[in-house]
Length: 401
Image (cartoon, rainbow, N blue to C red):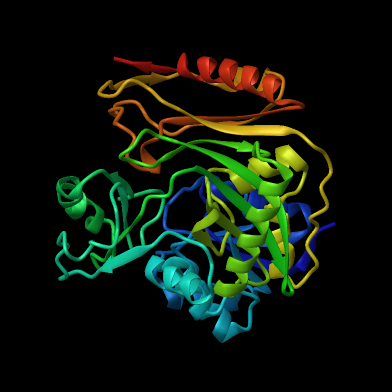
């Protein structure tokens, strides 16, 4: 039943927020959606929609007051978090403090917090805008290394470098993705990377799922697939969960979803980063629900409204999101309908991001991935067969020239 007395302000109306908007409808809450775009996908599904620039605090606050908004939430997005923290402070909404937001967005502050709390992570050195990187300044680090912007997202500017010449060659590119040209040079961790999807409510963290990551060949580190549940031992799972919960406490994340990135090395798990938000790449919106039945979108809405989140696992499946890779340099001539893919057994979600006339680029960050599919299955082999079939189908619908 619809409860028109409860309203929630959702930041973002893009494809990654669709399930968030739908879950609001399912639990009977009015959705007020804001987005900088004129006609995002969520506009048609929202109860009310407003086009608002991402940094327009005044208009955002006026909309919240106009609708008597009870709560605020976003899905898989970092850009609005500073504005949301300020709004929460002024209006009394459940959300992170500005300090927690900064520790979760700024990789320099995050690394400092990890080190201050004795959390295992890669050694790193920060270089501000006017600081020159010299061989002497990184003498305590050994190649290969990872270089990353201090505050970018979606793998933008994150590169593996094999020697000092490569570092200098990529330095300008990495700095260009930072808001203040600050760059981090850190130890390259050998191992397998995982993400950990958590819900923290009133100081208690529950790990909903551990996700196995697959990335592009180096030097870039762009995610091209995610598998749930991760193929790890029970002991490895416990070690990862313990580390992530310690990191969540250190950053100060509470009453929120979180998305942590961990490298499992020969020395045990080490923290890479943690986001005080839902995981991207459709992990929170589709993948986790397909693998264990928990809607992290719904849980986030419930927490924002001051309710106990529903995080009970309902089934055990394998699920995977796979990003399609196409031939570099080709031009998209036509996109054919893909509705037939929905008839395939185990289908969860599919989307084509490229449009006719666009050039297929080498994937150096997440926005360059042309399409994706998500399937589920009751075992790994069944799932992989379905992913392969779905991938081949989708490729036939993107005509190249």
